[in-house]
Length: 226
Ligand code: PMT
Figure 1: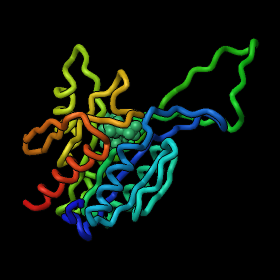
Figure 2 (figure 1 turned 90 degrees about the vertical axis):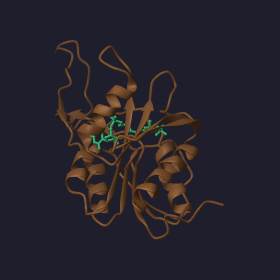
Figure 3 (figure 1 turned 45 degrees about the vertical axis):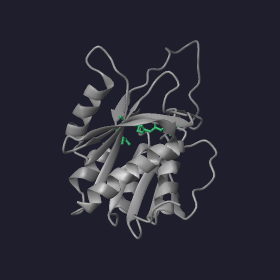
Figure 4 (figure 1 turned 90 degrees about the horizontal axis):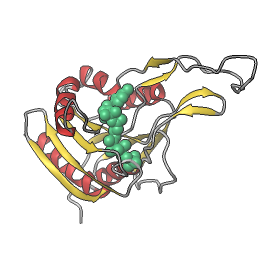
């Protein structure tokens, strides 16, 4: 039986991947299935929270019981829906994979290939950073949780990048997923680390996305109890 430690707590969870349209039939997107966000919404509701889930594109998933759903497509739509729900929320969790960039223009008609004109180039504009805006405008006492999908590279490990992101974004809790090679995106399982703004760090062992959601809500409940 799940604990009822989030009874009456107003929660917003974002889920899935945004799509940024190029023309009526094409878009720039990402591999997010929505499974992690849906698990977070479902578990929070089971623990007594009043949950609004803002979902971008996902694979077909059963609606989480007792959760108010808002469906969106682009990063800017997701930002508007999350911002408006966050205005009355105690906790916001950004599990959605949000496009950092969108095509600078969306063609009204399908882009055609032609032998007479040069091949097109896609110019990108930067999308607003929703998480940074949530942190900036947060209500007193509101807990803001970010996710970080990271790959290690020559300039640092997954954790190095994540620690820098936590400082940059200023959220209370950052859930770090190492991604790539069939990890985190689209899978049934997930693993990672929980980084807290006060420097506390905890690994989350590989398990189901529901288990990761439980670890996140445990950490949120702990922060709220302080
Ligand atoms: O959906 P699944 O298939 O189950 O996969 C789950 C997941 C891997 C997508 C999920 O666990 C995850 O890591 N989500 C965040 C992915 C991501 O976009 O990470 P990021 O490092 O690019 O962004 C960092 C944080 O800023 C995230 O909380 C993101 O929601 C937020 N963000 C990003 C860009 C932007 N313009 N605005 C934002 O708020």
